Image (tube, rainbow, N blue to C red; front, side, top):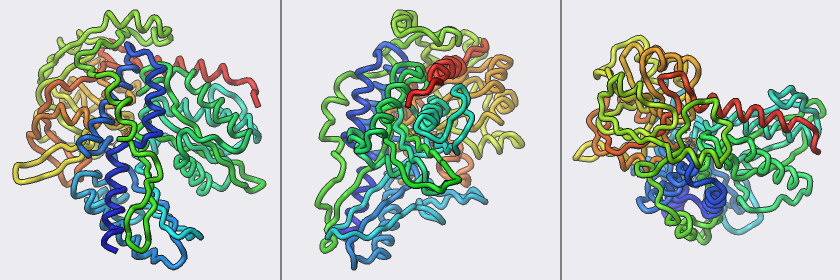
Length: 533
Ligand SMILES: O=C(O)C[C@H](O)C(=O)O
Ligand code: SF4
């Protein structure tokens, strides 16, 4: 069984580092529809560049390598226990080699197991079948987009859309609402899998199963096909755009399946997947353990068109200037016209209040110097304790990187931003207590943080979610680490960066791009209130 372990390892590495062809094509089609001069267009270009970098460096596309979920079909007589053992060993190896982030955390103690194994991790579903080969599919779905999954119980009253009944039109409303509520936080532009029916558990399972369908397949059920097409069309009119920056491309794919339900229950379950839609599969010969077929087209087979079409580098590009949230309803033409007014500001840490007060929503900031990572565990800790380093004028990066250590010290293998809104309960107090000037993350933050930025003199900078290779390249050195006991993703890493680009989306004058996009998309959502199906 040694060879099967090697094959599983190959599958894991492929899934984490090489985005499949169908996903790349969907991103490419989105990119073609988006205006290149806008922030969303630039974000899509950075995403494309990141996909290529991950493939070339055989490193994680995104630092959050997700909950490894395997769906395995075996011929009768194949030892499933043996396969399970091999999956676990292959996962440990992939984690040790920096292809996966240690992502399995004890829910009560917060302790990270360090090797991606633990109660409930990984997820493995076995099924027997009549075929004479093993089929193994794997999806690596990260936490940020997992948090945006949503389940509706019909009938329901939905914000902006009114009553959703127990029929196709009610289902339509739920799915549109699901895309709206995700905003940019699940690293849009995303893909959704929808499960109609089942119970609470199997409804979500069905939704996730849909994510295994090829991005360009056609639903055999005519009603569901019509609904899928409708959703993709209308979701893209919501104006949420890539990373919630506003724009034409919000949803790259929608797959819907239906199962029977109980008379009393009517669930619509939606699984939201970010653009970093990492799933792959292999067919394995049970006699030799070798891979005889890859189920999804491998990414390098379509590498040419996606990676080299344009050399997107925010450092040198000119994004759209967007001075206030009210202007969010601007048309694409206006956004393009505004692109010429964009500013690019280089900031060396520590940053002064004066420098921060000069920044406006829409400016691109290029950071040079030291930044400190901090996410959930650190924010909670800092609320009641001192910081091990001086944070006056500092930059906090909401990031849980993939790190590897050798004789020379620590190395960053992947380091994109995490969803900032989780820190909303802490951020305002932490900013004021320690004198932090800039917070980098993704998806934006809420009213409390916005008020603290105004009062204290701070900015929120939005980095491109999932672009973990792109940002890792900006990190020149690891200066040190504190709280390694929180686990690698939650530790406080002190990173020396150069050329780290992010966009001001919340400034010290009370403006928030996120609030503007949310408001505009809510108004658009309400225009889809009338029955269609
Ligand atoms: O945990 C992370 O690094 C990121 C997470 O997937 C997120 O989207 O917030
Ligand atoms: S950071 Fe974004 S791209 Fe990465 S797993 Fe989270 S949602 Fe997906």
